[in-house]
Length: 619
Image 1 (spheres, rainbow, N blue to C red):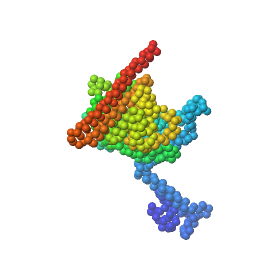
Image 2: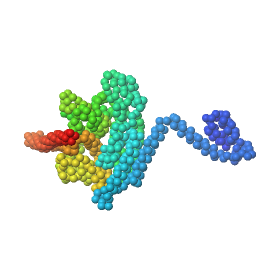
Image 3: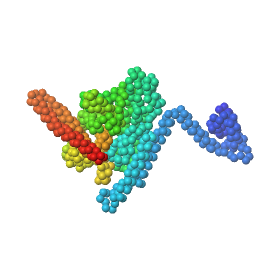
Image 4: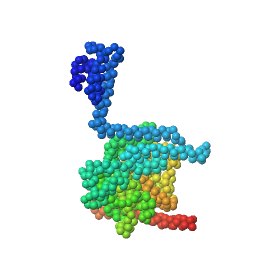
């Protein structure tokens, strides 16, 4: 730099040229710098410069060229220096931009594919459309659905984290999305990319202050389960020798969470700007509310202990919650329990476990959470519900299995007022009481779309509800969404209106219902149709039972609150009203129980008949 300073004193213009030259060639050495600087000084000087003239035949160069070069080089050096000294921030910005860009790309591709290639569905009775042409149109529509779902699924798997969570949410929206979308997204429940063991070890060390070797005498490097936000490893504690499961958060989930939620919100707003009826911006708000709780594993420990306490008095329900041993923000160490997914029919058959009993006890457990405890696990997909074989004689509940409830990050507290209104809505649905359905539907959803709200809540068509057939043996197995879309062309707009109007807690309850219905469908997939129908009917009977409990408790609380004054007459009146309330519940509930027993007996005869038919056919 001393050489440049000497040259700068000779002339202001020449000094500027040499300063730029020094900046450009600093890394190349002083020898190269001096040789080029002397050559630059021989060029024609600017006006007023008294230095030497350029040699004859040389090409003059305007000093502005070197100003531009200096600016470019200085900017490049500045960016390079920033990246070197702030590598993590620069990498985060670049990778976040890339993640957002591929989401934007696939969103545009899907929108364009639907715009160009998705044909309108002709009416069922349109005489101008032949049956073959109608089937061809249905095939094209199905292909577009499947192609679009696969595109989005690939992007969700590449980005991981909350994008996987979003895909799992989409898989449960069977009342909105075509079956191709739901089926494609279901694989995201157990197909996630695992973090490296180095990243796992680093996270454990940062959060617990100890290395894997210091904490565990054994640690399986291959995870036994990989979810959207974390993965689980089997290990053995060094101090006690106890076998444990170690849940470790993926290292970049928290880093990307804010930008991923913002990207999701922007994409939903973008789709809404193109398709005004698409009002699902609440998805971004829901993620923004739920994700911070799910990313702090100390909440898992608190929620698990609360559920265990809630079910401590229910020895007849085979629900098991792993003991939480140690919890940090991103690391959770818990009791290790062996088992298999609740919808694994081969595993259930291998251990002589009845799928119908598994279905019934899952329904009972979640009905208790919803209608009685008001503390609901809102993510009951099959990966979070395991079945552990047991010896029936060694259990207090009398079953040959335990239901192991996992992943306690997403819970919601249901107020007593909400539980009462929700129970009254279900009771009206079971009775097919249209006036009551309209009233309670408006109370819960805030809209006048009582028919569609009832369909979303039950998964059945309106004709079944109105004919009081939900608790009848002729209940249809599932709602035909395609037929519903054909009958109501503005179905998506109406569904969007309902979901954007209901309280956030009700949306999670609806999601939980959908996930439980999916489990039921898988558990009875290989049963005769009549048995499947009876299973669905028993679900409604079970819901009715717990609705009656919630209504009984709410009315009893109301009686005690209004008639709390002392005195013989007041006390007698209050006790008589409480007794009448209990008798009314007992009469209704006994009728439901008797009908459920009848269906169970009928199922036995149906299975025997199917077995005999099979033997005769293959004899």
